[in-house]
Length: 181
Image 1 (cartoon, helix red, strand yellow):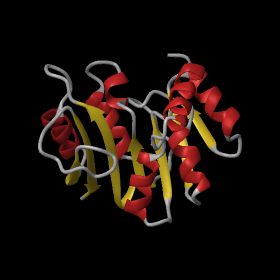
Image 2: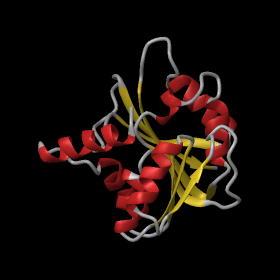
Image 3: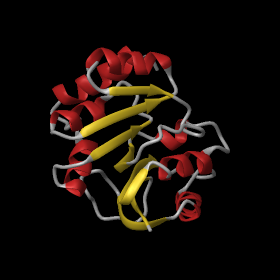
């Protein structure tokens, strides 16, 4: 998907009355208005830009040069990095690392544990990893994700079915909050 198509999708949803900032609302509710956030798999920066607008120090990382270019065009004042999430090291930590929009489903198969590990390495003491993704039979699921988080020193704190904190009772989408232990 091109960056223009990606952005147009969110603009269309907003025009139809949908909230395009559910992920930012969720992270904001966790952090209470203060902190540093890494938008891992940031795409064109939708989540990071909104969090920065709310006063957070937001940084974005994505492997796709077209998406990073789009993010830089939207908010040149923010730090945008083009790296593979399976091997990146920014040399800094954050209060929250958020992987919104099925990031783990877009990484190369077999790299999910490395992605989780590198994201965990960027979490400050007491910080969180927040990820929302679709659950598909036979694909990367919650059992593997929770095991990868556990191996990275993260413990499950909360799980929901939506970014609006719908109760988790199984289903095809999960938003998980893991805390650094």
